[in-house]
Image (cartoon, rainbow, N blue to C red):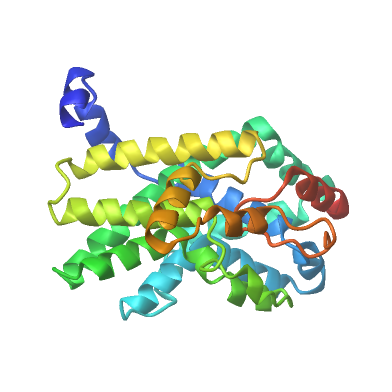
Length: 292
């Protein structure tokens, strides 16, 4: 891959891209998309009217849940990230505008598909950087703890999904069947695979530089999520490979459970199993109409 980048003269671009700051533009996109998905969740609009404090806490978990969970795993205080006032204020401003902006104007603007596609792509830039940072931080605490590096990187990339059941309690909803470990969405799976790749790179088992890996994985994540969002698709680019590997190793394909997860039976439309980051277009429109 390094040779290809050298031919294309992208080595310097990858280096500069990996050092590019995330605040405020990329972080702002991350907060907007995260809180946008929160608004899609059942009961979130009602909670914002009944208990703004609970709604704000849910929004903070959506924005910073990965940092909180990773800090707990590494023995730090779970409220460490709240010392960054600029991030908390920016996320809080986004929460207020998404839920309380007059005439729902802000929500309508960021939910407009062309705008949303740009925001989704920017969010994946942040996700990739968080995975890489999680692996790097874990490697300093546990120099040869490769499994710990994978776990921390995985949590940094998909922490909010992993603590979704706790966040549901704040909204007065309890749906243990939506546990992300049992029904992994594409971003959660991709975070796990990305954590493995960055751990291999950290251990010098992968013959690419970190900047190159960040660029390549960011491109994969951003393009995948943009296409899936544009098509309102819940499929996964990994589905075919996972089905084959699981059939080979465990005697059964993985695809069946994921189909059930994303396409609930018609007999029970009132309680579908949703992912934390993806909803069907019909559900999105119903929530938007209800909010209006």
